[in-house]
Length: 423
Length: 121
Image (cartoon, rainbow over all chains, first blue to last red):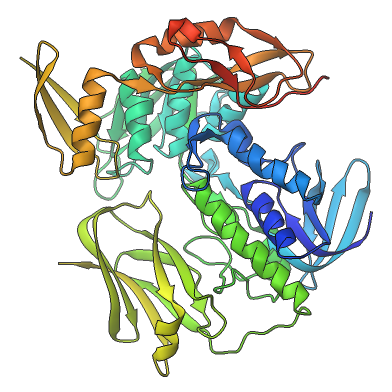
């Protein structure tokens, strides 16, 4: 094994695979993917439901099929990868320290690094749920892996906290495998999941969704015996007298995803306090030249198609960086993209009008449900775009597209603002 | 006269649609705010269909199970009958993506196919 590569990609999920293929197709030869699991494909392997790939392949695929297409591409392109390999550290000089059972601990000097580590589920410990700590409490994704990959049922009578898509998908999956899903409780007044999943995973099987409800007690010392949920007020405080007790042996948590950036931090990558992902410029490059980020480690996506698209850009840009001689070609003329009035964040956070592509996608999320509001884009004080949307919701990622010539035409441009305007 | 209440899945609006029916004939669709909702509601009350996904046990494979799907939509009423058939199946490795696992499941004319490959252990 060579100990120097032009590009090391940390993570072999949808982001890492798409980035690797794009970098190779852009002419980069020396690429290594490091994957922690025993196979490529990442979390898609356990997402056996359909609905993936409508944008990318114009057909509805399951998770494993979608992953399979990218894995095949990476294999065809002859890109090197290592499985069962845990990256321990990324140094600011792009030395990657990793370990596995065959090579032991080893170091790789990389000219460029793509962060594609994905995200993790928010655990019980981060939720402040009172009650005992018995067996039978799982994050929805853990339950998904047990059922779909390992073939184990986590339990038979289930309560789900959180209405994220994984929780909704698991409500149906557990029902398919003979479990009784009694209720889904969501602390927010709206669901974070896709409408289609609420209808096809809950309504189809008569599973109630209780909005503005949370778990206030877990009973059972060895194993979960019952869960009590209660309605919450506008400050998310439980309202006394609204408690309902459900006997059950399993509690699944689908309460949000957090980008996994421990490695980014040790590398010195600046992180956003809103997304918990790296702060990137229009090239998806972090504050460290030659270190790029894409996929759920950058910001949590709802559609894998957009992960692949974003990662392709990261791969192309990493290739261009290496093939261009690893020069930091930031002009210092980056313009800040400001998220305000209902827009929680944007990716990227800065754009260099001279360096950007002719068209630049800016992705963002809104902080609340907006009906018949508009997405407006300002170059300094001048509004250049206003697009009315029938609905925008925190669970659905939005995007705007900026034109290079429009940005270049604006003399002395200082900021680009993306905001929501109500009419 | 019968009224069916549906949530449209066409977009995040999730319009609450009411379909008024008489003897299986659709008299009226209300509550939708665009043609997608009208189309969805008519399909849903007359011929609801779903793609079913699950897993089957693999014998002597390099993994304990593989994922499967119905290659197209099947009638919603056949979902659990289809799952029962899927649960009875034991397949031998090797399996490739797209291999037919159950032909014409429950007489729907739709095959259950593998969505994951399995090699020999």
